[in-house]
Image 1 (cartoon, rainbow, N blue to C red):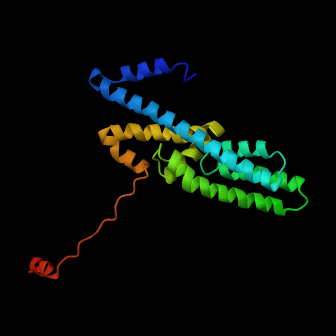
Image 2: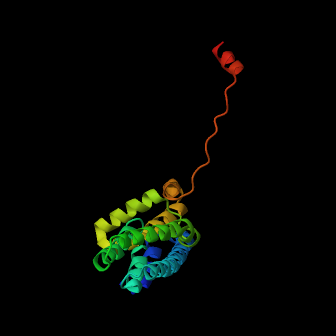
Length: 205
């Protein structure tokens, strides 16, 4: 419905602000659309790569329903921080139910752990994180809040919605500190210059 009523919503946003801010509003709307498109593209590429890695690991271990479990795991992995836990739990349960030894579940856990290392240290920083600059602390809060409000759908939508909020904050002068707080740019370490003893004596005297 949001996609269907997109023209109405955009026109409402333009009417909400005065004519003096129309160019600024148009810039924010354009950047928001670009941000969401790039973010969704990054997620799709990440899901595809993780699915290939999952399926390859499960097939190598001989786990039943490897293709299905690999795809489900990749889709769940899109949910930040929480989806990965559920993604590894499913093939582990299948391994426990279908294999003669519990070691296969351990092998699945180790395999998914290495896949997560690849995902978190290479795929996400290079593909997804470059699209949305949100720090991990507020990402976790947004995912938990999204789950509380809208369930699974809220967990999927929490990060792009938070990215939109940050983008708006970055374009409004009084709200720029809040946009900076949501971002992942760490400030440089403040260096305190040593105070000269002679200057202290002079001030005391």
